Every structure is written in structure tokens, then in C-alpha cells.
Image 1: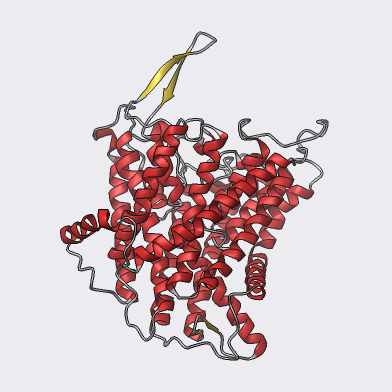
Image 2: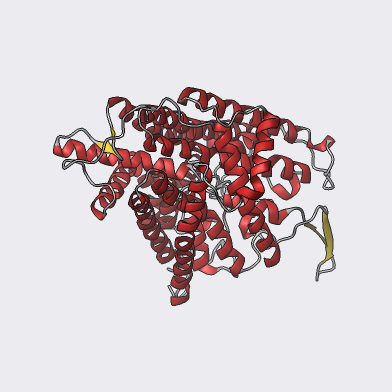
Length: 564
């Protein structure tokens, strides 16, 4: 480890913390309908969108109607994207002459991007046309990211209201999330990435003469624009198979820092939005504090692990482990990016996670297994952390013998059933499908490695799918009918199996009166509660996943020979 490596971590932290308050304040203004910086410019566009779509912005919805619209919206989006991927060979803007995807791969890809997962079982530079990249993948990134923010805002609004029958309008929340938040930030991000060297063109590519006298086809495309929204939306799907390890997606260490900031900024700032909308800013900082502590612990462990000598090269003196990493980033920036990717549920990668140390692989999986609470994707990270906050106050209530409450809302049997359902559905999908995969020849055929590392490849894939992350160990051959179908099922369960209980919880909380704090109310905005919250998160993750992790990366770490 070096001072320069720690300075990179500190610089990223400083940038994200500096953006939390202004961006969080702006989003609170947007979603509460207050005057905001871009409203004079985008207000007419918003009103025109409502008129064209027949939406009455004043007409709010109960939780059930809100949920139905969310599900129908995603279903229609998946059908459109599936058709686009199947028919791309017959559509314009296809200078690469990309063929239509097979049915199972198109299904997997469509589900992947509408669920904000961005799992990619294909090489983007050869499998997708420009039309599919722009009208399919990029549009899906905007809409899936916007839908996640909308669900989070509905839950926050439920805490802010008292005796209410509605939680807002999904179409208004979605429109504002895309128009006022994702679109302007993505334009700024695309411009900065283009300045840093990311191409932005509709050309098919160029042909270069190599030093050996051969010819090499270099793929191009609208890279800067898609890269920007993939990072901001929590999507993570790259134009190239190498994702952010490719020099066109991530040219320099400076662009690497910019990309990590783009991944984290909305998820972190939404905690400030939460505090402002519920009228208690310290509550938002408490949630961010828990996120920051967990993130720092993971980043430090990864950096220490990857700075050590690789057991694959026992005769090599010193470290770090540079296998699978780009030299222009090194161990520090690669470890930090991996932490950002798995903690944020974005899934973008600038190195091969399959080549990380076994302990590092355990940390990466643990980041996703704790429930997308360490920053998380825009929206889903916030509502996942709020679920654990409710679990924490329930635990405290059991210890002192009082009815638990959070932000003035009593937490009773119905709310706890919904919270437990939402927090257990992703582990069920992860462990259930992984168990099926290791028992069937179709699942075992995808492994690149044997033993503990092969199990890690399978376990990581389903963890990534159910956590709507999308990153991969890169050692699993997942483009098969078995993996395309089961991973798509895990993505749907991990996304909608959480969203539906969250919206039902929002409806239950909005209908409750909001009571002022009393002498017996447990404070949820101080260091004691942050510690309790972190403890609940870690205990829940350990109880569910330690046996599986012990058989995979932990066993490999303790094995006398690399590969388990």
C-alpha cells in the first residue's frame, strides 16, 4: 500500500461528500415541486410530457395503483427491448452488421437492463448495433434508474405524510427523475468523458495496421453518452466487453476518478434528500454515516488484500497483485473501483474480479449480499437502507420492551412482515439458484475453475443478479440457455420482489399518523443508532451467507494451493 493509493481513496470520498448537500437539496426541491435550478428551463418540457401522455400531475395514487404502474411499465419496457434486440439486424444504424440476438440471450439482456442490473452475457462491440445501444440499452438505463429513484421517493414521502391514502404519482416521479436528475447530469458526464478521451461517434470503427503487419478492427460508437448514464443510473453495462477496463470507456486515471464519482453521487445524495423531505436532516446523515463506514471498511480491506503478493506467484518478491488489472490504474484504483462497483450495485468494472485475491472476492460478494445498502443504486440503495433501519429500531424495541417507531411512525406487525419479505427475497434467489446450478450439469459446465473458485464463480453470478448489480467474476461462461434463464429469473426476483413489498410498506406508513417524539422515543440520528444499524446489517448478512462464503472464497483463501 502507498500514500498515493490512500490519497486516491480520500480524494474520491471528498468529492462525493462535497456533492451530497447541493445535489440532495436539488433533488428534494424537484420531488416536492419547489422551485429549482432547472425548473424554468425544463418545466415546460415536463408539462408537455404530461399532456402528450395523458397524465394528470395532480392525480396521486395509492400504493397498489403505484405498484401496478411500476410493474406494467417494466413489462412493456422489457418487451420493447427484447424485440429491438431480436430485430436489430433489420434496423438502421447497424454499420457493424450485428445479427439479431438468440431468444434466450435477448430475454436475459432485456430483463437485465429493465431491472437496472446490466448483466451482460455478450460482447457489446460485436453483438449490438448502434441502434440497439442507443434506443435500447441507453434508454433502458435512463428509465430503470429513474424508476428506482421514483420508488425511493414514494417511500420517503410516506414517512413525511400523516393519515394519507396516497404516496404520489409514479409517472410524475419517473418523469422528474429522468428529466431533472438523470438527463442533465448525464449530459455533463458525457461531455467530461468525451474531453477525457472517450469516443462519441456513429462510425462503425476503424481498421489499423499492427506492428506485426496485420490488420486490427477497432470498434467505435456513441461511447461517452452511454458510459455516462450507465454510471449515473446504477446500470453499469458497457459498450465494450471489457467495460471500464477498455481505454475507450475509461481512458485515464482522471476519467477513472470521474467515473467512480458518477457512480456514487446520486445514491449518496439521496440520503440528504431523505433528510430534507422528512424534515430531519440528521436522519439522512445517519443513514449516510452507516453507508460510509461500511464502504470504508470494504475499500480498505480490498486495497490491503490486493497490495499483497499473489499466492499464484510464490517466488515473486513483494506485491501488489496486478493479475487482471490495467497498468494505468494499478492495485489502488482497481481495488477502489471494485469496491465502488459492488457497493453501489452499478456493476461497472475496470479490472477482472476473477483475478482478485480470494479474500477480495469474499469482500466483493459481501458488499452485494448485505442487501444493496452501501450507497446502492440510485433509489434502491436508499430504500434498502431504510428497510434495515426499520429492522434496527424493531430490534431495539424488542430489547427495551417498547413498540418500535421510526420517524414518528409506529412499526407494527404488518410493516415488519413486509420488511422481512423484502430483505429475504434476494438471498432466497441467490442461494436457491446457486444450489440448483451446482447440482446440474448445465450449471457446472459454465465454470472455468474447479473447486472453491469454481463455486465462487457461480455464487458471484447469482449474487450479482439478485442484487441487481451486474458485475461478474468474468470466469463463468454464462451465455447458455440455463444461465440466461435462471439469471434472468434471479434479476426479476431481486428487483420486483423488493420493490413490491417496499411500495406496500409505503402505503402502510403513509396511512399512519406521524407522532411527535416522546421521552421514550429512541433517537435514530446519532452514533449509537448508526452502530446498531451497521450491526444489524452485518449480523443479517452473516447469518444468511457465511456458510456459502466459507465453502467458496474463504476456503480458497485458506487453501494451501491457489484455486482451492
